[in-house]
Image 1: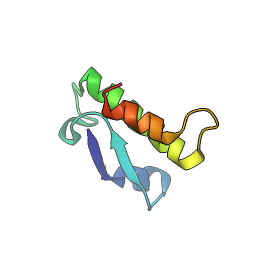
Image 2 (image 1 turned 30 degrees about the vertical axis):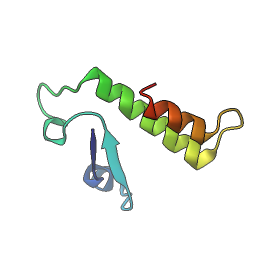
Image 3 (image 1 turned 180 degrees about the vertical axis):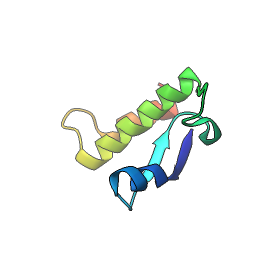
Length: 74
C-alpha cells in the first residue's frame, strides 16, 4: 500500500493540498510491467470505503461497524 504526496495530482490537476493513495509499491507505480497484489487492491478499496463513510456518513451502516469488520479482515 502506498500513500505519498500527491505530486502527480498537483502537476496534472493543480490541486495542491492532497495525498495520493493506492495499492502497490510506489517504486512500481506508472512503470512498464507495473503490478500489485490482489489483496492490496481489496485492502485499498476497504480503506477508501471507510474514508467515504467518515466524510459523508452512512444512513445504514456506521463507521464503527465498518472499521471493526476491516480489523477482522472482512
